[in-house]
Every structure is written in C-alpha cells, then in structure tokens.
Length: 280
Image 1 (cartoon, rainbow, N blue to C red):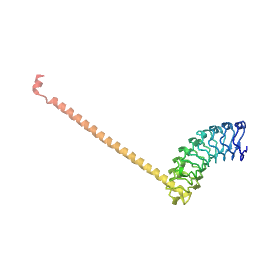
Image 2 (cartoon, one colour):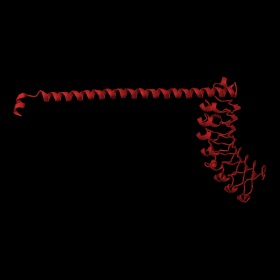
Image 3 (cartoon, rainbow, N blue to C red):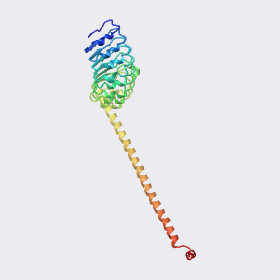
Image 4 (cartoon, one colour):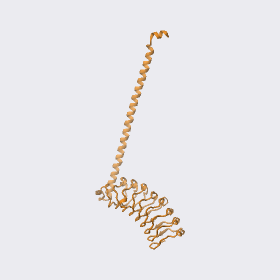
C-alpha cells in the first residue's frame, strides 16, 4: 500500500484490519505518531515512514515480527523503543538517519539478520557494547554525528562481514584495537576525524593500509599480553619454589631440633645423680 507524499496527519487504528498487508509506504506525510495498532500487522515486511514528523515510535512496532526493512529516517526521533530489537530478528535493513537519536538501544544487538544500518546525521554518542553480535552487517553509515561520536566499542571488530563503513565527520580519535579483524572491508571513509590511531598518513593510503596497521597493532597487543602473562607465571613459580625451599629447610631444622632434644633427654637419664639412683 502506497500512501506516500500526501498530507496525512493521522494513520487510523483501523490499519490493523489489513492483516495480510506486507508493504506500507507512508513516507513524506505530516504524521506525528503511528498508532499502537500497527503492531498487529504481523505479515508486514516493509515499512517506510520516512519524511514525517515522528517524535517517537510505538513500542508495539516490535511486534511486527515479519519486518525485513524499516525506514524511519528524516523524522524527529530522539530515541527508539527500548525493546525494538528483541522480536525484529528478521530485519535486514534499518534506516534511522536524519533524526536526533543520542543512542541506540541495546536490543538493537538482537537484530541478528541485520545487513544494512544507516544512522548518519544524528547525535549518537556511541554504540551498544554488544554491537559485535550483528555479524551479518555489511554496510554501516555512522557519518555526521559530529562532536557526539568519539569512539567505537571494542566488539566492533567482530563485524567480520562488514564491507562498507562510513565514519566521516565525527570526533573519533582512535579506531578500536580490534579493527584489523575486518577482513572483508573494502570501503572506508574516515574523513574529518581527529584521528591519532591510525595516523593520518596511514589513513591517506587507503583501507588496506589501515587494516594492516590495525592488525599489526592488535598482534602487538596480544603478544604483550602473552609476555606479561608468562612473566606473572614465572614470578608465581619462583615464589612457589622459594616457599617450598624454605618450608623444606624449616622442616629439616625442626627435625634436627627434635633429635637434639630427644638426645639431651636420653642423656639425662643415662647420667643421672648416683645418690638419687641409690635411693630409688
């Protein structure tokens, strides 16, 4: 159903009666909210609500379990429903760009089928730490979150199917140490970031140079951790050996003392006072 480019201000609750509806396009209207009844569209696969005046999405939208594509870009959203990701496990494309989002809910990390995520031009301050669970992601656009986006979580390196990544126009100083694990990455935009790691001369050489630099950095970190672990293990063994040596010495010393005391007492009986012996 295509209702785009009209002057709609309200979507009626009766929309829920279209129980077999698979595609709904309500883009570029004047909608301020979506009815809760939209969650009853259990067969809906594509929902385009971009270009409206939506300030929030109903919690019931997570009940649209058949959704494959959801476009709510170019609205006035400041947050997404907390539980939005728990049931949208078939969602492959999520477009939330050109809003005022400050964060993505942790439940987004449950959208395990997600391949495309566009969140550019928001106010994102970061990503959920479990973002690495979205291992099917191929395209991610986080550009133009400006002064708000300063870092990516360490789990970002687990997005091993990622091919296209746009991080331009942010305030990222360092890529996560795991970044070198993104073997399939072929497109990378890091323009307009105050990057220190990797240095700009590496960035200017292209995506392969960045991946190589970050891979070597990650390997160096792992080797250093292994070295520290071995040193700690050796120190523990040294301490254990010292304690064992001292315990053995103490045991021998105590044994020697016991023998000396026993000998002394025995000698005392052999060489007693003869007067007392006669009296006995």
